[in-house]
Length: 100
Image (cartoon, rainbow, N blue to C red; front, top):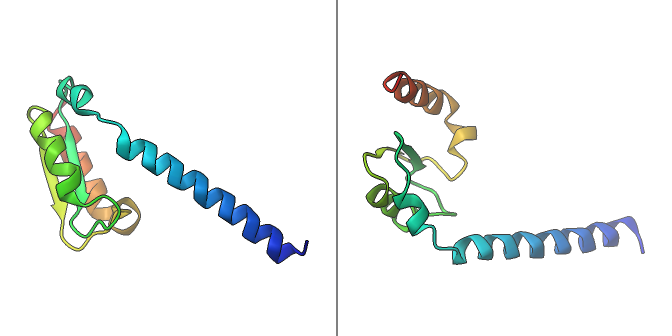
């Protein structure tokens, strides 16, 4: 088998494992766990998240965790910590400083 074929087989296996993990996460109901959180909580989400849309997780999380503060970043993707570092860091520091 040539190197390209080996890489294709490795990638296919990696992709299937990733899909299994995503399915497991999607099938797990964290409702009761979220209801038990009793510390200041900040939910930071990109409004353009194509992997986990806001309506699917963030809004539900905010309803279940008492006293949650939320920040939605217009146009930000799922990986907003990589694309919007300055905004994330400033908002996170502000949140942490308000709870010390």
